[in-house]
Image 1 (cartoon, rainbow, N blue to C red):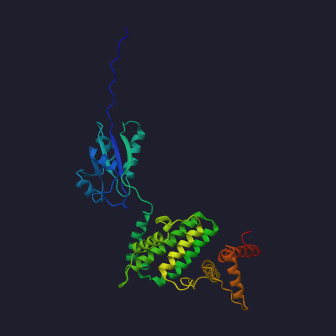
Image 2: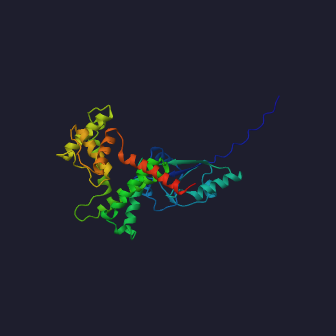
Image 3: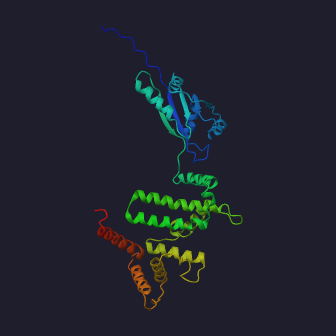
Length: 329
Protein backbone atom coordinates (compact mmCIF):
# COMPACT_ATOMS: atom_id res chain seq x y z
CA UNK A 1 0.00 0.00 0.00
CA UNK A 2 1.45 3.36 -1.08
CA UNK A 3 1.78 6.08 1.50
CA UNK A 4 -0.04 9.27 0.73
CA UNK A 5 2.26 12.26 0.84
CA UNK A 6 0.89 15.38 2.50
CA UNK A 7 -0.16 18.05 0.03
CA UNK A 8 2.33 20.82 -0.44
CA UNK A 9 1.14 24.16 0.88
CA UNK A 10 -0.15 26.39 -1.88
CA UNK A 11 1.79 29.56 -2.59
CA UNK A 12 0.37 32.72 -1.10
CA UNK A 13 -1.45 34.84 -3.64
CA UNK A 14 0.72 37.71 -4.80
CA UNK A 15 -2.06 40.11 -5.81
CA UNK A 16 -2.21 42.55 -8.65
CA UNK A 17 -0.81 45.99 -9.53
CA UNK A 18 -2.87 48.00 -12.02
CA UNK A 19 -1.25 51.01 -13.64
CA UNK A 20 -4.15 53.22 -14.71
CA UNK A 21 -3.36 55.70 -17.48
CA UNK A 22 -5.55 58.57 -18.64
CA UNK A 23 -5.33 61.19 -21.37
CA UNK A 24 -5.25 64.88 -20.55
CA UNK A 25 -6.95 65.44 -23.91
CA UNK A 26 -10.13 63.79 -22.62
CA UNK A 27 -12.33 65.52 -20.05
CA UNK A 28 -11.57 64.28 -16.49
CA UNK A 29 -14.05 61.74 -15.17
CA UNK A 30 -14.75 60.24 -18.59
CA UNK A 31 -13.22 56.85 -17.91
CA UNK A 32 -13.89 53.48 -19.49
CA UNK A 33 -16.23 51.04 -17.78
CA UNK A 34 -13.39 48.51 -17.08
CA UNK A 35 -11.48 51.35 -15.40
CA UNK A 36 -14.41 52.23 -13.12
CA UNK A 37 -14.93 48.55 -12.28
CA UNK A 38 -11.26 48.12 -11.39
CA UNK A 39 -11.19 51.29 -9.28
CA UNK A 40 -14.29 50.30 -7.29
CA UNK A 41 -12.99 46.77 -6.68
CA UNK A 42 -9.44 47.78 -5.71
CA UNK A 43 -8.17 47.35 -2.18
CA UNK A 44 -6.09 50.51 -2.49
CA UNK A 45 -5.83 53.38 -4.99
CA UNK A 46 -2.66 55.50 -5.07
CA UNK A 47 -1.64 58.64 -6.96
CA UNK A 48 1.62 60.54 -6.65
CA UNK A 49 0.14 63.78 -7.99
CA UNK A 50 -2.19 65.44 -5.51
CA UNK A 51 -3.33 67.83 -8.26
CA UNK A 52 -4.16 65.09 -10.77
CA UNK A 53 -7.32 66.21 -12.62
CA UNK A 54 -8.98 62.82 -12.13
CA UNK A 55 -8.83 62.83 -8.31
CA UNK A 56 -11.89 65.00 -7.59
CA UNK A 57 -14.00 62.79 -9.85
CA UNK A 58 -12.73 59.57 -8.28
CA UNK A 59 -13.45 60.83 -4.79
CA UNK A 60 -16.87 62.08 -5.84
CA UNK A 61 -17.56 58.54 -7.04
CA UNK A 62 -16.72 57.23 -3.54
CA UNK A 63 -13.23 55.94 -4.34
CA UNK A 64 -10.66 56.84 -1.64
CA UNK A 65 -7.34 57.84 -3.17
CA UNK A 66 -4.11 58.05 -1.21
CA UNK A 67 -1.61 60.65 -2.34
CA UNK A 68 1.53 58.55 -2.26
CA UNK A 69 4.46 57.48 -4.42
CA UNK A 70 5.58 54.13 -3.00
CA UNK A 71 8.78 52.35 -3.94
CA UNK A 72 8.50 49.13 -5.91
CA UNK A 73 9.16 46.99 -2.80
CA UNK A 74 6.43 48.78 -0.82
CA UNK A 75 3.95 48.32 -3.63
CA UNK A 76 4.68 44.61 -3.86
CA UNK A 77 4.19 44.31 -0.11
CA UNK A 78 0.87 46.14 -0.36
CA UNK A 79 -0.37 43.46 -2.77
CA UNK A 80 0.43 40.60 -0.40
CA UNK A 81 -2.45 38.30 0.32
CA UNK A 82 -3.98 38.76 -3.11
CA UNK A 83 -4.84 42.42 -2.80
CA UNK A 84 -5.26 44.72 -5.82
CA UNK A 85 -3.52 48.10 -5.81
CA UNK A 86 -4.34 50.65 -8.51
CA UNK A 87 -1.78 53.35 -9.31
CA UNK A 88 -3.28 56.34 -11.11
CA UNK A 89 -0.42 57.36 -13.39
CA UNK A 90 0.71 60.94 -13.62
CA UNK A 91 1.12 62.78 -16.93
CA UNK A 92 4.69 61.53 -17.28
CA UNK A 93 3.67 57.95 -16.54
CA UNK A 94 5.45 56.15 -13.73
CA UNK A 95 8.92 55.37 -15.15
CA UNK A 96 10.64 55.17 -11.75
CA UNK A 97 8.03 52.76 -10.44
CA UNK A 98 7.95 50.51 -13.50
CA UNK A 99 11.76 50.44 -13.68
CA UNK A 100 11.88 49.51 -10.00
CA UNK A 101 9.38 46.72 -10.50
CA UNK A 102 11.37 45.41 -13.47
CA UNK A 103 14.59 45.36 -11.43
CA UNK A 104 12.82 43.63 -8.56
CA UNK A 105 11.36 40.98 -10.86
CA UNK A 106 14.78 40.49 -12.44
CA UNK A 107 16.30 39.35 -9.15
CA UNK A 108 14.04 36.27 -9.12
CA UNK A 109 13.98 36.40 -5.32
CA UNK A 110 10.63 38.15 -4.85
CA UNK A 111 7.23 36.68 -5.75
CA UNK A 112 5.86 39.37 -8.03
CA UNK A 113 2.22 40.40 -8.27
CA UNK A 114 0.48 40.46 -11.61
CA UNK A 115 1.18 43.77 -13.36
CA UNK A 116 -1.50 45.20 -15.65
CA UNK A 117 -1.54 48.37 -17.74
CA UNK A 118 -5.10 49.64 -18.02
CA UNK A 119 -5.78 52.64 -20.29
CA UNK A 120 -8.76 54.40 -18.70
CA UNK A 121 -9.24 56.86 -21.56
CA UNK A 122 -8.02 57.01 -25.12
CA UNK A 123 -7.17 59.86 -27.45
CA UNK A 124 -9.58 60.28 -30.32
CA UNK A 125 -8.14 60.91 -33.81
CA UNK A 126 -7.04 64.53 -33.96
CA UNK A 127 -6.61 64.83 -30.20
CA UNK A 128 -3.04 66.10 -30.57
CA UNK A 129 -4.46 69.21 -32.20
CA UNK A 130 -5.49 70.24 -28.68
CA UNK A 131 -1.82 70.19 -27.72
CA UNK A 132 -0.97 72.40 -30.68
CA UNK A 133 -3.63 74.94 -29.68
CA UNK A 134 -2.34 75.01 -26.10
CA UNK A 135 1.30 75.36 -27.17
CA UNK A 136 0.40 78.14 -29.62
CA UNK A 137 -1.54 79.97 -26.92
CA UNK A 138 1.46 79.94 -24.61
CA UNK A 139 3.89 80.96 -27.34
CA UNK A 140 1.64 83.87 -28.33
CA UNK A 141 1.58 85.03 -24.71
CA UNK A 142 5.23 84.51 -23.76
CA UNK A 143 7.42 84.65 -26.89
CA UNK A 144 8.73 88.17 -27.69
CA UNK A 145 8.67 87.50 -31.45
CA UNK A 146 5.41 85.55 -31.73
CA UNK A 147 3.51 87.96 -29.51
CA UNK A 148 4.15 90.79 -31.98
CA UNK A 149 3.17 89.03 -35.19
CA UNK A 150 0.20 90.09 -37.34
CA UNK A 151 -1.76 88.49 -40.17
CA UNK A 152 0.08 90.65 -42.71
CA UNK A 153 3.46 89.90 -41.20
CA UNK A 154 2.88 86.16 -41.37
CA UNK A 155 1.40 86.12 -44.88
CA UNK A 156 4.73 85.47 -46.61
CA UNK A 157 5.37 82.44 -44.40
CA UNK A 158 2.04 80.93 -45.43
CA UNK A 159 3.10 81.16 -49.07
CA UNK A 160 6.57 79.75 -48.37
CA UNK A 161 5.22 76.82 -46.36
CA UNK A 162 2.66 76.01 -49.06
CA UNK A 163 5.40 75.85 -51.69
CA UNK A 164 7.58 73.69 -49.44
CA UNK A 165 4.63 71.34 -48.98
CA UNK A 166 4.18 71.09 -52.76
CA UNK A 167 7.88 70.38 -53.15
CA UNK A 168 7.73 67.59 -50.56
CA UNK A 169 4.79 66.05 -52.40
CA UNK A 170 6.56 66.21 -55.75
CA UNK A 171 9.79 64.81 -54.31
CA UNK A 172 7.91 61.91 -52.72
CA UNK A 173 9.70 62.35 -49.37
CA UNK A 174 7.28 61.00 -46.73
CA UNK A 175 9.15 62.38 -43.72
CA UNK A 176 9.42 65.78 -45.34
CA UNK A 177 5.73 65.66 -46.28
CA UNK A 178 4.73 65.03 -42.67
CA UNK A 179 6.91 67.90 -41.45
CA UNK A 180 5.68 70.35 -44.07
CA UNK A 181 2.05 69.51 -43.33
CA UNK A 182 2.82 70.43 -39.73
CA UNK A 183 4.31 73.76 -40.83
CA UNK A 184 1.21 74.55 -42.88
CA UNK A 185 -1.01 73.58 -39.95
CA UNK A 186 1.00 75.90 -37.72
CA UNK A 187 0.14 78.81 -40.00
CA UNK A 188 -3.57 78.08 -39.61
CA UNK A 189 -3.39 77.83 -35.82
CA UNK A 190 -1.13 80.91 -35.55
CA UNK A 191 -3.49 83.08 -37.60
CA UNK A 192 -6.49 81.81 -35.66
CA UNK A 193 -4.77 82.67 -32.37
CA UNK A 194 -4.03 86.20 -33.58
CA UNK A 195 -7.64 86.54 -34.72
CA UNK A 196 -8.86 85.95 -31.17
CA UNK A 197 -7.40 89.32 -30.18
CA UNK A 198 -9.32 91.41 -32.72
CA UNK A 199 -11.24 94.06 -30.77
CA UNK A 200 -14.37 94.03 -32.94
CA UNK A 201 -14.51 90.80 -34.97
CA UNK A 202 -12.61 88.09 -33.08
CA UNK A 203 -12.75 84.43 -34.02
CA UNK A 204 -10.91 81.34 -32.80
CA UNK A 205 -9.54 78.12 -34.20
CA UNK A 206 -12.85 76.51 -33.20
CA UNK A 207 -14.68 78.96 -35.45
CA UNK A 208 -12.28 78.11 -38.27
CA UNK A 209 -12.79 74.38 -37.79
CA UNK A 210 -16.54 74.75 -37.33
CA UNK A 211 -16.81 76.74 -40.52
CA UNK A 212 -14.98 74.24 -42.67
CA UNK A 213 -16.92 71.34 -41.13
CA UNK A 214 -20.21 73.03 -41.99
CA UNK A 215 -18.96 73.77 -45.51
CA UNK A 216 -17.83 70.21 -46.13
CA UNK A 217 -21.11 68.75 -44.94
CA UNK A 218 -23.14 71.19 -47.03
CA UNK A 219 -21.05 70.57 -50.15
CA UNK A 220 -21.22 66.77 -49.82
CA UNK A 221 -24.95 66.08 -49.94
CA UNK A 222 -24.12 62.70 -51.50
CA UNK A 223 -22.38 61.76 -48.22
CA UNK A 224 -24.40 63.58 -45.55
CA UNK A 225 -27.71 64.08 -47.38
CA UNK A 226 -30.08 62.49 -49.83
CA UNK A 227 -28.18 63.25 -53.05
CA UNK A 228 -26.34 60.54 -54.93
CA UNK A 229 -23.01 60.67 -56.74
CA UNK A 230 -21.15 57.73 -58.20
CA UNK A 231 -18.42 59.47 -60.19
CA UNK A 232 -15.89 62.21 -59.44
CA UNK A 233 -17.60 64.35 -62.10
CA UNK A 234 -20.93 64.15 -60.27
CA UNK A 235 -19.21 65.06 -57.00
CA UNK A 236 -17.61 68.09 -58.62
CA UNK A 237 -20.97 69.14 -60.05
CA UNK A 238 -22.52 68.97 -56.56
CA UNK A 239 -19.64 71.01 -55.18
CA UNK A 240 -19.85 73.74 -57.82
CA UNK A 241 -23.63 73.93 -57.59
CA UNK A 242 -23.70 74.39 -53.82
CA UNK A 243 -20.73 76.74 -53.96
CA UNK A 244 -22.49 78.96 -56.50
CA UNK A 245 -25.54 79.19 -54.25
CA UNK A 246 -23.40 80.02 -51.20
CA UNK A 247 -21.29 82.68 -52.88
CA UNK A 248 -24.03 84.18 -55.12
CA UNK A 249 -21.41 84.83 -57.78
CA UNK A 250 -22.26 86.55 -61.03
CA UNK A 251 -19.10 85.43 -62.86
CA UNK A 252 -17.11 82.21 -62.96
CA UNK A 253 -14.00 84.33 -62.44
CA UNK A 254 -15.06 85.40 -58.96
CA UNK A 255 -13.01 83.76 -56.24
CA UNK A 256 -10.01 83.16 -58.47
CA UNK A 257 -7.04 84.82 -56.70
CA UNK A 258 -5.21 86.98 -59.21
CA UNK A 259 -2.06 87.02 -57.09
CA UNK A 260 -1.23 83.36 -57.70
CA UNK A 261 1.54 82.35 -60.14
CA UNK A 262 0.71 83.13 -63.75
CA UNK A 263 0.53 79.58 -65.12
CA UNK A 264 -1.68 78.48 -62.22
CA UNK A 265 -3.90 81.51 -62.73
CA UNK A 266 -4.31 80.81 -66.45
CA UNK A 267 -5.09 77.13 -65.79
CA UNK A 268 -7.64 78.02 -63.11
CA UNK A 269 -9.47 80.43 -65.40
CA UNK A 270 -9.47 77.81 -68.16
CA UNK A 271 -10.88 75.26 -65.74
CA UNK A 272 -13.70 77.61 -64.73
CA UNK A 273 -14.53 78.25 -68.38
CA UNK A 274 -14.52 74.56 -69.27
CA UNK A 275 -16.60 73.54 -66.24
CA UNK A 276 -19.18 76.25 -66.95
CA UNK A 277 -19.46 75.15 -70.58
CA UNK A 278 -18.55 78.59 -71.90
CA UNK A 279 -17.02 79.21 -75.31
CA UNK A 280 -14.41 81.90 -74.74
CA UNK A 281 -11.71 82.21 -77.45
CA UNK A 282 -8.21 82.96 -76.23
CA UNK A 283 -7.14 86.56 -76.83
CA UNK A 284 -4.99 86.90 -79.92
CA UNK A 285 -1.95 89.08 -79.45
CA UNK A 286 1.80 88.94 -79.84
CA UNK A 287 4.10 88.36 -76.90
CA UNK A 288 5.42 85.58 -74.72
CA UNK A 289 2.62 86.11 -72.20
CA UNK A 290 -0.06 85.10 -74.69
CA UNK A 291 2.00 82.12 -75.81
CA UNK A 292 2.30 80.98 -72.19
CA UNK A 293 -1.44 81.53 -71.71
CA UNK A 294 -2.18 79.25 -74.66
CA UNK A 295 0.20 76.59 -73.30
CA UNK A 296 -1.40 76.77 -69.83
CA UNK A 297 -4.90 76.42 -71.27
CA UNK A 298 -3.77 73.47 -73.38
CA UNK A 299 -2.19 71.79 -70.35
CA UNK A 300 -5.39 72.23 -68.31
CA UNK A 301 -7.47 70.75 -71.11
CA UNK A 302 -5.15 67.74 -71.19
CA UNK A 303 -5.44 67.25 -67.43
CA UNK A 304 -1.93 68.48 -66.65
CA UNK A 305 -0.89 71.05 -64.06
CA UNK A 306 1.24 73.58 -65.96
CA UNK A 307 2.91 74.84 -62.77
CA UNK A 308 3.93 71.32 -61.75
CA UNK A 309 5.06 70.51 -65.27
CA UNK A 310 7.23 73.62 -65.41
CA UNK A 311 8.70 72.91 -61.97
CA UNK A 312 9.60 69.38 -63.06
CA UNK A 313 11.28 70.71 -66.19
CA UNK A 314 13.07 73.37 -64.14
CA UNK A 315 14.43 70.73 -61.74
CA UNK A 316 15.78 68.81 -64.71
CA UNK A 317 17.37 72.05 -65.92
CA UNK A 318 18.86 72.60 -62.45
CA UNK A 319 20.40 69.13 -62.51
CA UNK A 320 21.88 69.84 -65.93
CA UNK A 321 23.40 73.08 -64.63
CA UNK A 322 24.92 71.29 -61.63
CA UNK A 323 26.30 68.61 -63.94
CA UNK A 324 27.90 71.27 -66.14
CA UNK A 325 29.44 72.83 -63.03
CA UNK A 326 30.73 69.49 -61.84
CA UNK A 327 28.71 69.75 -58.64
CA UNK A 328 27.98 66.43 -56.96
CA UNK A 329 30.28 64.41 -59.21
